[in-house]
Amino acid sequence: MKAKFVRCVNAIIRNHAGTGVKPFTVKRNLNNQKYAHYLDRWIYFAVSSGAKELTLDLVPRWHPHHRDIQYSFPSCNFAAPEHTSIEHLKLCFCYLRPSPTFIGLSNLKTLDLSYVRIAGEDLGSLLSCTLALEQLKLKFCPGLDYLKLSDVPCKLNYLDVRLCWLKAMEIGVQNPVTFNYYGAADVKLIPNRASVLKEANFELTAGDAVEFAFSELAPHVPKLEALFLSGFTESGIQANRFHCLKHLQLKMMMRPKGYDLLCLVSFLDAAPLLEALTVHPSAILRQLVCGWLMVSLIQAMKCRCLVGIRITPHS
Image 1 (cartoon, helix red, strand yellow):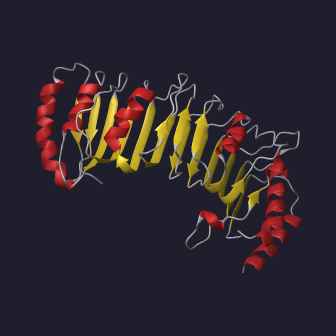
Image 2 (tube, rainbow, N blue to C red):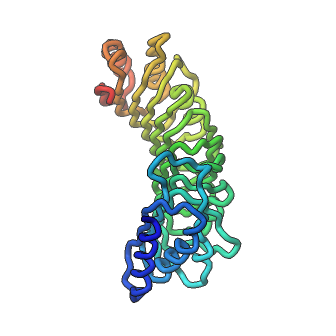
Image 3 (cartoon, one colour):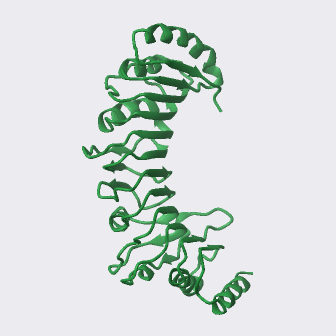
């Protein structure tokens, strides 16, 4: 079936005029060196034909694992002096190593990498010469243990990082960015004074979510105005403060050994400018949180900024 698919694509490309191609998508498990030559040719055809969207999805149907990645995306196709028209690039299940002659993607607005093996320095090199980039999405990217976004294009406004096993992140963007993170709470945030990160969504799959918020977010992302925080917690009262936080959503699951709600009180004490608080408690905590809500409302009277507290079911 794969050989038939390759023959079919080759026939179409051979008989195509080479112009007018807008989206070009390959979605097939061709993760094998014997197909690399054909994939290279197809990508070259897409680039030279003026395609604006390029998707290469080689993810196996069953049990994909990053150790099985074989194909290396040919960045040499983007080494020509003329500008390419690619605006949206999505790569799945391949290596990405910018060649020494890589000059960037001058029109690229969206970069979506999933199951892509890329080193931190290679990603930094790629981003530094992709000046029109607006959205960056990273998912299951092995080898990426340090994410540094201090020299990224000024147009970047959306960052989505999911299950990348990062050890540290430095986000030094100089314009407002919406940041989504899904992964463990053991990632360290490196302070960067240039950062103006104002909106963040953190869904933490392991570790203490509240402790992460106060130990990493509060001191290292001081201009944060809107936060969605999801995960487990055992934490109580915390020391650091969110000086600019206005909108907060909490989707917390307390550990079975205790139902300490002091972490919720901590946020009221630590965010003097808080205007809206939404809590999504788990079913076992709903009655406790409703009782806590009455206490919070009384405390909130002392805060002129807080205008709304809402509790919704945990979905």
